[in-house]
Amino acid sequence: MRYRSITYIILLVLCVFTAGSALAQDTAKTRTSSTIDSAMAISPDYLHTRYAPFPTINFQPIVYQEIDTSMVHISEYDPLVKVQNLYQSLGINGQAHRSMVFDIDHSLGFTMITTPYPLYFKKMQDLKLYDMATSYTDINFTWGWRRELVFSATHAQRIRQVDFVVNIDACSNPGYFIHQNVNRLNVNALVKYETPNKIYGLLAAYNLNHGKFAENGGLESCSDFTDRDPRDSALTYDLTSFAVMFSNAQTLINTHTAQLTNYVNIKNKKGNYFGTISHTLDIDNLKSVFTDHDLNNLFYLNRYYINPDTTNDSIQYFLIANTLQWSNYSPTDTLGDKAYFFRISGGLRHEFVNAQSPYYIGNSLALFARTYIRMFKVWDIYGNISYSFFGYNGYDAMAKAGFRFNINKKQRHQLGLEATFMRYAPDYIFSHYYGNNNAWLKTWKKQNVFKASAYWTILDYSLRFNFINAGKYVFLNSSFEPMQLEKPFQVLELLLYAPIRTKHFSLDAELALQHSTNKAITVPLFAGKLSAAYRTGIFNKKLHFQVGVDLFYNTKYYADGYNPILHQFYTQEYISTGHYLYLNAHVAFRVKRITFFVRGGNLLAGILSFHYITTPGYPMQGQSVQAGINWKFYD
Image (cartoon, rainbow, N blue to C red; front, side, top):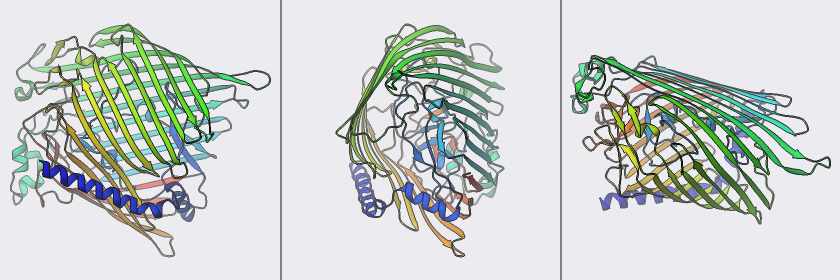
């Protein structure tokens, strides 16, 4: 074990030095400048376009970044295959997934359930504001040889003082095992308006997540799949011969979120600014329904509280919140390059929650404050604090403080420290749930989490060390019951992201080393992705050509299993996953603003072995082919 740890640490250090050796070429031109040059070369109609996160109630000064017009990541049509995302999944895109890099995060307020689709189901903080001259449009379409279809489109438009953005993201995937199809849709829209005198402003957004999933519960026997004879063509190509847990189960999830912020910048007749008063209305609605018949006792464990023949379990709630706050900056202010500034905001938030299943009706009130201070042009100090009263989240408290030293702003060269403390109630579903096969009513002590981070960044390179200490942690055990750890545990993480760029060659590396002190909290010792590509121009550079490969690997560990009835991952100590090398390859070419690609996935499947499983019972897709097109409009 010690030998393995040393080996992986040496590998990580070598990647750091490799990344550093490429900085001499990167510092002369950042990714932003090279992106613009590349786009100008193929499209003289390119217009300057940037984006930033949509400002939610905890808005901070906005930091814009350039859109990526390079070909480097064009074949990463699915968020799960992106270099930066080290995730376990249920085998095909569109399904539930969980990060292999352990983290605990919580935002202010009530949480009924954390849905297991973080890369697919959008939240308000995932939406983007665009800064453009007139308009920007981005269209993507991908087709897979098993009738896998992925479509996404973004359109941003500016008309005088009004900016609006519309996004559509859809996926249809029939899968390759019995009863595995996925249909998913995300639609969101946002509007930003500010009067010419910059006295009044409005921010509005709506977000819909829709998912319909055929839940097969995974294979009844993983060993039948992993240990099969590759010469047996019936088992190699006809995957419907493998028995699954469920043949009839379905999950339907719909979430609707809306946010409306009105703000007024207070100024006197002389133009002196006295801060901004804002009011934010949030509406959040979720409904999920799990249905099944001809129940499989192997999974249901002979536990039936309502009906032994059919299951129809639902989770639904409605939340409405009002937030009133004052700040000495507006929600659309950018960070700026001033040598000194002091930004502060504070307010109160009221939430009303009405949940039908599991039942809960309650109110809560929270106070919060934030600050962002810059001194001597290079020192940034920031932090926030909040405290909740009443209701299920009564006495929840959160605090965060950070310090950053800006060595070189043009190169985004920074050193920083962050510390976060959270004391909060777990998701309500862990406290109260009543379904056909699971039922509990429990009272938990508050979870206590302390996170400390030290990081170094330059351009888009980053190296981060995380320390997490969690006490009274609540999770789902192997019997599908929530339980709380009495003793605190610690997780240590070392994370590296290195995007190396030269004129024709690119190499992106995302590497993670982790260690957990509690066997119930399992993480792979090492997980990493490498994506390398070579590109060149042919036919007098009218055609841009790229060829690339991707590698993904993680060490063996007891990855969490998945329970589709509860839409939750759970701990297990019976089936280990990992120690398998995933290899993908792609070819792409671009003519003007249109880019095409063909991607081959998991090319070593069956050649290396059949152990390509990241979640117990759910094999990843075997050898596959996808083709896609991307078309960007800048005017």
